Amino acid sequence: MKRKVNIFWMLLVVGLLVSCAPKIQQSFVSNNLAGLLNSGYQQKVDNFLIIFDGSSSMWEKYNGSKKFYQAKNVVLGINESIDGLKLQGGLHVIGDTQATRGTLVNDSLIYGMTDYASADYAKAVNTVEINGLTPISIPLAKSVDTLKNSSGKTAVIVVSDGVQVSSDKATPAEAAAQLKAAYGDRVCIYTILVGDDPVGQSTLQAVADAGGCGFATTEGAVASTEGMNDFVQKVFFEKKAVVQEKPVSFNLYVKFDFDKDTIRPEEKDNIDEVGSFLAMHPEITLTLEGHTCNMGPEKYNLGLSMRRAESVKRYMVDKFNIDPARLSTVGYGYSRPLESNATKAGREANRRVMATITR
Image 1: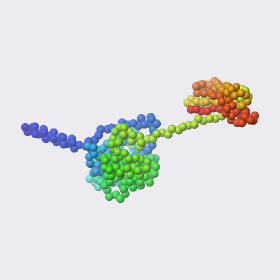
Image 2 (image 1 turned 45 degrees about the vertical axis):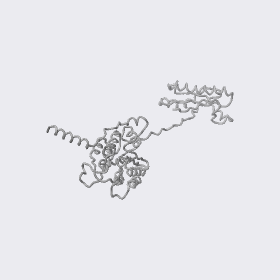
Image 3 (image 1 turned 120 degrees about the horizontal axis):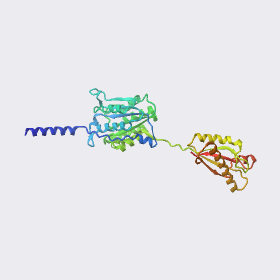
Image 4 (image 1 turned 135 degrees about the horizontal axis):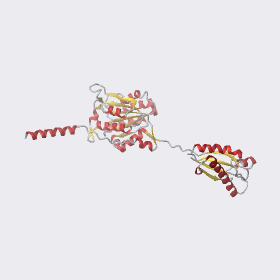
């Protein structure tokens, strides 16, 4: 009987310990950096600073686990998701760390700003403990000094329940505005709300709004593979600009005698210049455009202009071993005069071949 009682108490103690243990979610991260870089995205920030709220209000439970552990899971998730990026990183903690335990320190920069290393960053995150008030405005204001030696663009990310409990005179939104004023477009502020406190939500929204180019979201929105990938994409990446290059058209100055499609010897230097360029750049293709003056029937001139273009094509293929598929030809007859056909000089100028780079 005594043995049964002892077993009962042992099971009861274990059950209590399990029920009281922090419920830390398993990693939900699937690093998508390669996918982003291979789908036309590029890194848009050079630095990041996370303000991690470990104050006493984060001890409260939300959706079955303490807000602190949800916040910690998000910070670690961001860290895993950006592992591989070349950045300057920082971590500013609200609350205690193993190093500051028992002191009156309420907030501290425990990592950076320094060259970012994911493993070292995770170690810093794991030293954070719950304690103290919530001076959200203080680390935001201190970030002005924290970022003083940074260059390029910075993402400041606040992970908190938004509950401001401190004697600091500046509101979190005012402190965020000070940070924005110090760095302008170089800094964007993002907030992640843990919990559902309406005042906290309003506070973090105001902080994000003060940053101008960031946004406010929630732990629930980012605590999944899809949600975290979307957050990291928006904060750390941007779509590469697609430059639409206009085709480059230029006059080869390959002039022809009246009613002829034979290349004159004095014109070959002009063709050689383009032919050698094509030989060195196999990715380039050309459209050769033949033209005539307005003397003679339209139908005849269309054929003559095409023969002139074909003549230049044959010359390039034979002399420079250009793939014929890279050279297309078209004849415009006298429909596209370069100069007026009313003069002899104008008609001579119009008896020509032009080329357009199409790729």
